[in-house]
Length: 405
Image (tube, rainbow, N blue to C red):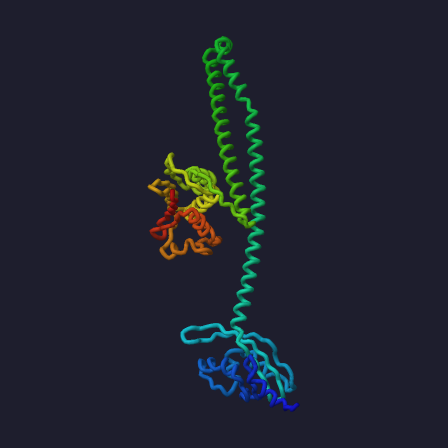
């Protein structure tokens, strides 16, 4: 077997290496450069206007740390650096792209260094995409866990609220309005006898006062019972929404669709946001015909859409605005049921309007940009359409949702 001196072995192996290899002297002058190295460096030499006879100038541009380590390396032979990644911008025509080179350097002799380099852009991009995908997955998983915990806490609070309402209702059912009614009847029956003792005017006044108290208490009890029933209905709807959201988080979607009265959904949603209207002194106007065709859908998901639209309209109205109003109108056209929500909020320009339904886009400092995107997905799943228009900043907005019937 024939023995080759180290220099000869290097010269033989360099041309066939899969990475760029440059043998340089202590001044950076290139002694040998294999074809792979020439292919990698030529575009950079051309773009920078450098000559291809010294490696240090090009290293100063794309990886100055590598150049420094080689120049400052001791005289003894050995590794200078291994697997160092350096990224640099490279202008190719009108386009600037990020290049990623991996470097190694070995001092063969006192005045002889072999520098290896390879373009790992593809691998780097794949690794970067994979890493980002892992981060995104972890973030989504974290959001799911947070959402699950929040839903659990809300569910517990709703159950507690429902329990208190039930207790109030049971207490009211044990009222003494019947006793008060009997007392009024007693005084009316014996009004003449009472008049003989306290006078006719006082006897008549006592009967009127007791009768008024009985009527007031009866009316108050009716209003309280009605409010409790409405609150219990709202709680049922909230629990339905929570149940649907839990199923979304767990990956089990429910697509059951039943006949729904759109007006009923609006009324329920208005009950749920009544406190926000009242707190901000926003005037609400409803124009909902009694006779409306039914639409088939998932009540909870449609409530989710309406609540999101109402919430956006409420938040769009400045608390110090002179005109604070939201109008809701349902129109019945041939083959279409149209819901319109108009607010006197801050409105938006044309450019913003184009991005409203883009996933991740939001005009709110604490928004996620998912609400309207989800609303559009829900409405389009019913073969419907949703659009939000504004005549410009300060001129409010009009949301129009169309359902085919």
